[in-house]
Image (cartoon, rainbow, N blue to C red):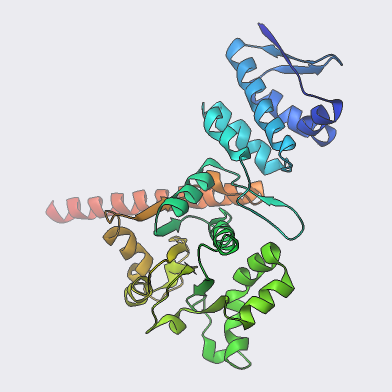
Length: 335
């Protein structure tokens, strides 16, 4: 058995790392099979040598988050513990780096997973980025944060946010109200992100001045978009023609981020998703990056991650079953 003393600067820091009612402490002890005791002059970790080192490393990362002002949510703690257990402690330490942006309430916006950090790095170093992954990975929110950062730094002169007006089972013609009333529900997540980062008054003023534009994808046709940060959200619901039209709007001094979840396609023919085609066609083009998120990057409630994993396993099982049935039918036919 090995022992290690882990220290923080104050009892308040120790309490923050341990969590409410020692919830974080209990999670670390259970995951690494160690015993952690606060002795007053330091925290003693006892257990198998490698486990002790990993537990101390996980607590170091959590302490970094505390000192940077990041809240230790249950999801954050579980993610840090999981990454340290996978020998990715050094990667996860970089997540407490400087914030991408600050919300109007003063909350720093930082990547919360290694996948999110790689996504932000890709946006910073490429003109076009495709961010593909399940719900809750922050792909749209972080893209908006990067757009706001670029606008504040005067790297671009406007932000353009767009989505295809396609949702499960609904068509615009059957919704009440004028055109703006009809498209606003589709664009609401984009408004919400901007309100959080810039404030309602600033967003409304910038909308009036066309510094920020939020519109359905169809509004992009026939335009050339210069000096802009352009985000296409829910791109899995574009057709091949729509996404090609969008990509060719790129003008001088502009950057594009295209986000989508290829498991949530609402088109009548899912196989015709423009996003799936774009992933294939653009994978070898310079200055275009394709970033794939995994269920580990989900930063919503832990159950969201579990639900995504369960559905992925079920889809794999169904695919395997269908493949077996096809082979069986071929054997029966040939026999």
